[in-house]
Length: 148
Image (tube, rainbow, N blue to C red; front, side):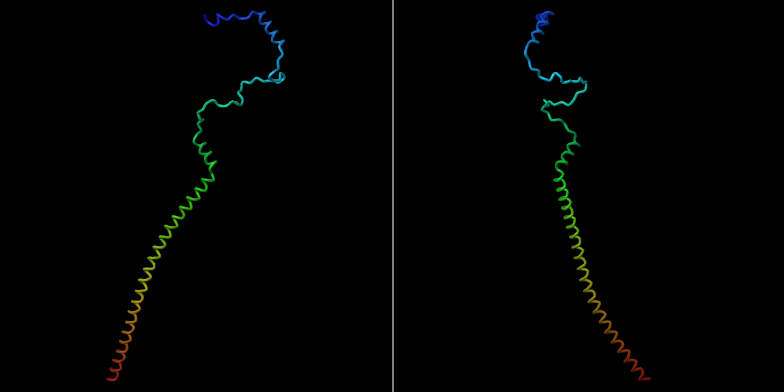
């Protein structure tokens, strides 16, 4: 036998007697009876706790935005440190280049000093030979003038 066939409904007189009985009971209303409740087909804000234990998936852009908003100071300090480190390494490379250039210039200056000393000695020797030759020429001229 199914459930529907086993239960018999109340007759009209039994229902009226039951509703009279309910009206005679002393009760306290759960809501103000004067409060108007408007019917709406739109769903409003839902105040119940979620029953799912799975985390709601958030798109990557939103997660990155939240991460940078929460950790912007750490990122700023990190970027400053990376820039300073880059500048430090770059300046060391430049200083090494400048040092090697200075060493090359020092060697060139030393070789130029040595060369100028040798040139000075050669010039001095040429001056001596020019004076010697001029003295010889003068002496030969004097001898030639005397013979004439």
